[in-house]
Image (cartoon, rainbow, N blue to C red; front, side, top):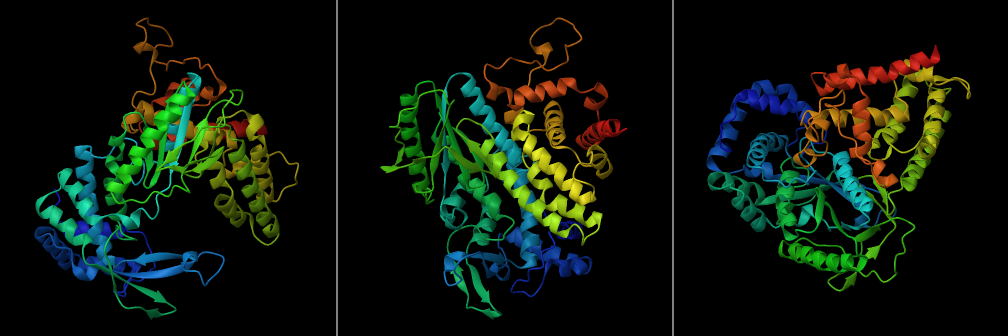
Length: 519
């Protein structure tokens, strides 16, 4: 599989699919330039790549990176205020992409990666990771159990990967022989130089870590950290690349703390063995519970005798989680960001045409309303009304209409969904994929049809079974509101042949409501 020869057509297609980065490596080429000539050089290039695959040797010239420090903020004299951007040769990216497709196919066939690793994987995403977390927590709260969420901070995880350990893990996963030699060659003898103001430094050897700016690097990293889930049978792991979240529950709070201390120490020991550095000062935990429950103050969680800070909320994958699973802080943060963006729109309203203003709306405002809306947008309108008011205000500015104008015609003409309908569309798409078995395996048994519970033939036989949650927070889980929404959809929608046709048809149905309201 790994050593299957590549064709000139594969080289062409792989090159075309590369992102159009304008960064120029030490070889002097950019991706757009190579795309223009790839048809002419694909045959000799495929011959070179096949030689690499057959010999297990990655070309040395393709292992030299150019690093450009990009200033972030504050003091320009502090090196910590610069982000290093690594630019690899274009031909390195093409060869990496070819090997990437082979490695990914092998991983999928052998089912190597743990189910709850969501980073850098097809059909996995941040919103699925968040739904998994929320479902776990709400399920425990509904069962009157406490849940601890420990958010691990790893220091420069990608840069500290030990090559010897990584190669041993690849061997254990079944990557051996010439294929393993190829990865060994790919990782070894890598060099980099730094360019500042046109001046290039001498070359410096890289002895550890996966190559920055590489295509294979992220996939090799998640393979490296993959077996961390074997350390604990009690904890639930939610992994997104180097973002590691550990969940543990118990009805007895003291037992929970005791188990958490034991399990987190095992995790710390595993990280040490694998030469990954845990930053205890930036690691923290949340105790998820209801406000009315009395929580003692002596809930000491420690790693290597160092205290782990307990926090009432934290940002995970761009979404703010609170200890009572209220979304107040997240919605408030979104409102503040959107308000600032509205100020930008207002300042430019008289200077720009409507089409450009709408582009700015889609760039500056809509992403905040849309991102992981499925996780937090199913709340009552009491909580989300302020966001909807801001959304309407922004669109009135874009369309240059009075502040009190009816907005349904605007939403309809711009084919833009209201906040509540963004949630419906995302939920509907999730449910469609769930029913079509297009989701990761951990979501396979999320929903149960009535036919799986009883054999009585009724009108509701093919509907999803709706269970009654004990708590309000559980009603906001995807299992509950997703089931209700799916059952309410007409059969003509639910039987669409693909997710794309479903999404398009459902969005049109939602938009049609605005036309009816404005008529």
